Image (cartoon, rainbow, N blue to C red; front, side, top):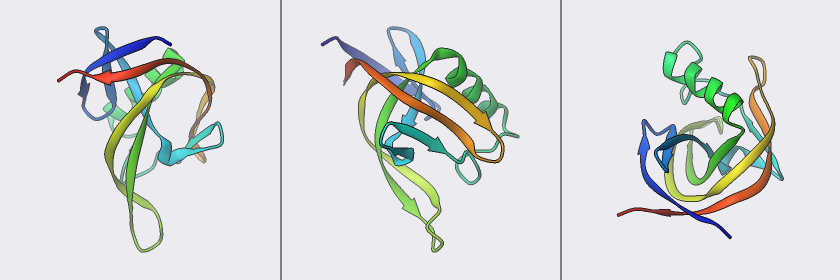
Length: 119
């Protein structure tokens, strides 16, 4: 299997791999092979230009770095923050979509590469 190196993260939204920015997607939002992120405050706000840009990049790149994160939830069980634990791998994605009422979704495709983090 191919191994690629992450040389850093940018803005908590992207990993830099071979000089390219690849969107980060957390396993917090994965069930089976389906990623469904409500993409709402407090974690995201489509009114924020950086969040809108992130959506466009996910929809265009057709690949993400999957991350394992610890989710911190409020009294209602809503995710209010996340702490990165590790990078799982670089994955192809299929059928990416953003719908305001349901958020960002896609199907995880095959693993493209395992990842290491440069020190």
